[in-house]
Image 1: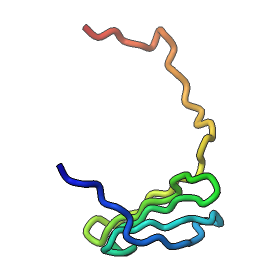
Image 2 (image 1 turned 90 degrees about the vertical axis):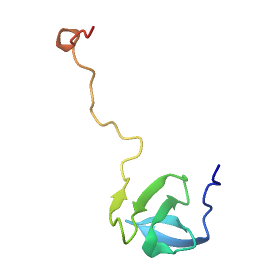
Image 3 (image 1 turned 30 degrees about the vertical axis):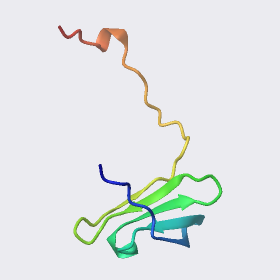
Length: 79
């Protein structure tokens, strides 16, 4: 089995005003990073690598998304 990769570097940076720890592996921030809030230890951002660029921000932790279960009459029985 392969061992999980451990963060090689930890730095600090603010993401939209939230103080965060920035975790990277030995390749550095340009090859992907995880941003974790210092206060609540919540994931705030993921960034991709140069081969797979992108950014995913999480900003509405614990907020009601307004998702409701469908009415029983809208549910189809399978099988």
